[in-house]
Length: 499
Image 1 (cartoon, rainbow, N blue to C red):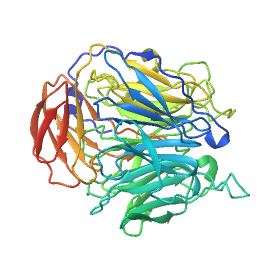
Image 2 (image 1 turned 90 degrees about the vertical axis):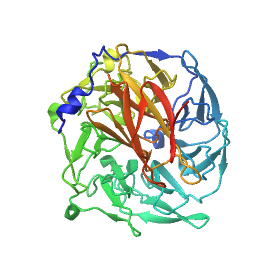
Image 3 (image 1 turned 30 degrees about the vertical axis):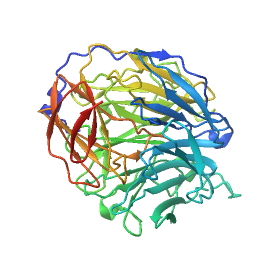
Image 4 (image 1 turned 45 degrees about the horizontal axis):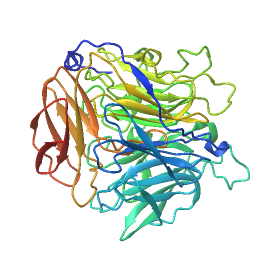
């Protein structure tokens, strides 16, 4: 990867080892039959506007659960049942532009929309007549000129196909706003996606749809996909510069690691995890060298030497040194004999030369449960990213980040009036004087769940920075100087406000 001297120098703070301690939380686990071998998503959001990040966890055969964040000096989560059944995943977005966050609940069965009441209560509403499918991937974006979001639903195996499950991948669904409703476009071929993400990969103002597909079920003839969101969506091909990749795709994360203005893409999988960088100006991506330390292909502790299975994947600077680390939730699908059973989560710590070093065991997050969805967010508002993981047939786990000798940080929460209130599609840029961190606001990615929490930036020794926002529905803001170690709300045509 093309890390500049400026990026290498941006840390500027001596770092201790990352350290997390377990937190007792109410019992919740993701369970169910073979339809729930996959899924188990976790959404992070502020569902009552109190400035603390709450969690919503899928339950599979168990009820879903809302974890209301009541943290003060320590992390405290209060659990309330969400009576949604057969859930595989959950994502937060303000679908009706009332500023209260809602939920899109993925299911084995018709998917559901649950409207938020602003107090962490949710009620189902039939806004879209979703079909009876097995949904395992989701993303949303606001297309240009639209007042409501476009929704992408990734469907797994077609349960009605008598010749399944192998080579029986279902088609996928794109729901675009149509007056006061939504109209469906079928995206085919489908190759059993386990993660979806609308992202403006070229930074031209249009988000395209990336699907990460599970080779275990498409077997032959499939690949990773990138759909161009033209009026009639089309797949990018080799003629466009798109390179075919065939993996057991499970999760997607994006981040501009080398500060060149274009995001790298990290894909979790069975066996190798695939960190990829852009190849030229087109939609092509190539794997970074093995020496980068990002493949995380076998367990590093636990004594099981078989290949590893990655699920949710997330970037975040856990030591605030200005370098983005990566967390990967790990765990066997169920009892796959060729894959590791004792399969610890990864915490890959970014090094100044661009490589990653494993620290999951040192940090205390090397759980051997079957990890699925996760959230890397600041639960207690102390400026350090904490961690929550949903496990299959084991209790959900939460860890508080207690790392010492950490750097400075910022927490930035962007909002717009009237339409697309969470500013999905915006780019936040933070300039510390040596390089610029760019961050796109998205709904999707991860594995069956994602984060609507404020954007967290580690900044090393910087005590002040310049920021700007490229808004989707308003002119870009000018560069503004702000102080670090604070939380700010950002709005168009308004100076940043601390809270």
